Length: 338
Image (cartoon, rainbow, N blue to C red; front, side, top):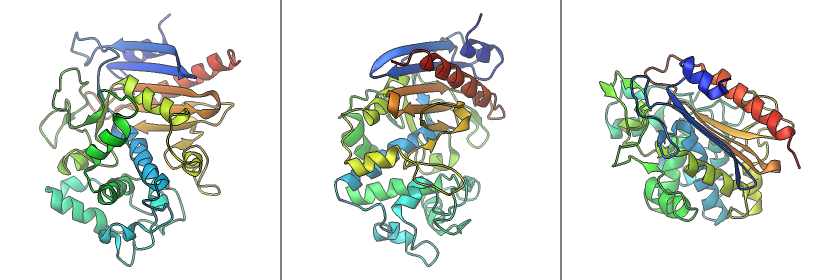
């Protein structure tokens, strides 16, 4: 019988996938299936790099929490204290925490690149675009809040986001190949044919707003292999996590009680997209077909990387595949809990 992922490739949910699961720092499951595109004969492997899309966001969350843990910012400060562009009547009260939690009231994910074609124009409109709701009243997933957080990190750390992440996250925790705007594009999984850019995207950020902004953003832009994302998740759950206790709790507890969705400062809490679990689970997905799933009580890390947007984003079969895969994982783990 084919595995869930093998069947998914046959059903063209995606051309390829890699999956690794760690429990208590022990690799317990790994699988790789498919080729880089449906037309290619190049098999995917565990060193293949993928466009993480919004799985980049937890890295930005960690960068912000790292600054807070060092006393350089406060999560309950208004962002306008650090970024003067946010000092407007409508946005002046928005806090760092609200940006982390997607409760700042920003519009969802506007395709601003269609109207604003330069970095300066798009940067300006990010801050001047009207809010969709009053800050602090509801969870509304958006990339704008994390774009703002990326700029906040740069302002406070006095360096660019890519350099900060490399020095403070990637190198200290042994992440080997992860980064923005990879120079060497060999071994990178293609994503989608972009009408906007007129080419198949390989090693270029898939998100068009991020492309106009130069590829280094707080909401997307990282490329990595499965092991680097697993290493990040294992660090978050383990003793190597350098965050002070209040900020670790912020990563792994519901910070939006009473609102329309449960979120921590980096993840969705108990997302039904991953099936029903007997333990609290924290997860994030990426538009290109990526995901990270963490169960702190079990020190469980599950990372699934695919290129489901190849050749087009008009394919959401991965949602059912991801749910089935993690439901199977839950049953497997439940039968082996020590």
